[in-house]
Image (tube, rainbow, N blue to C red; front, side, top):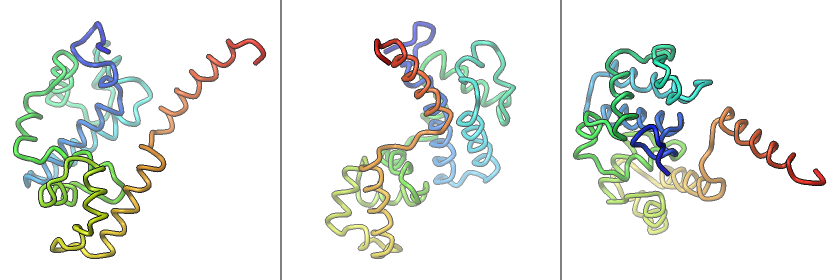
Amino acid sequence: MKDPRAGVETSKLSNTYVAKMFREIAAAYEIKGENRFKIRAYDTVADSVEHATSEVKDLWEEGRLDELPGIGETIGQHIDEYFKTGKVKHFEEIKKGLPPGMFELMGLEGVGPKTAFRLAKELKVNNVDELFEALKAGKISKLPGFGKRSEDLILKAVEGRKEGGERILLPVAFSIAEKIIEELKRLPGI
């Protein structure tokens, strides 16, 4: 579903999605050896967006992005471009040459950018399901720098994802719960 006010799918307007986008850029910078201050700046913005009490899309529309810690002129321009066009050309350039699967793997507990990069590149996996197949085949423990213990920890993270799905932040869960309660109150007999 597209937001009529922007060229972006509604699900991609959420703070969670925007924060994920900035975390991916921080990870790409880390893999490409960018200076740690730039990496930290993008991580800080991701944290600010993720923990914001207002939707970043609303702050952007109201011209109040500067209320969030870490959002300066350059990052503000990236957010502006994203909400207007649905993409950020600079981000696409940064991610060029990186295996796309690495970004999904980073969502696993204990799997950081460098590990995700190696797993995606060396095992040629594009998602968690393909990683699970590589785990079942014992391929991870055969990689240099990985052992049985690493393989077991990654397997535990993959199984945790499969069982419980992705985790969501408490403010997001609370908002969803409030909407469900309101709908339930409208039902007769409740």
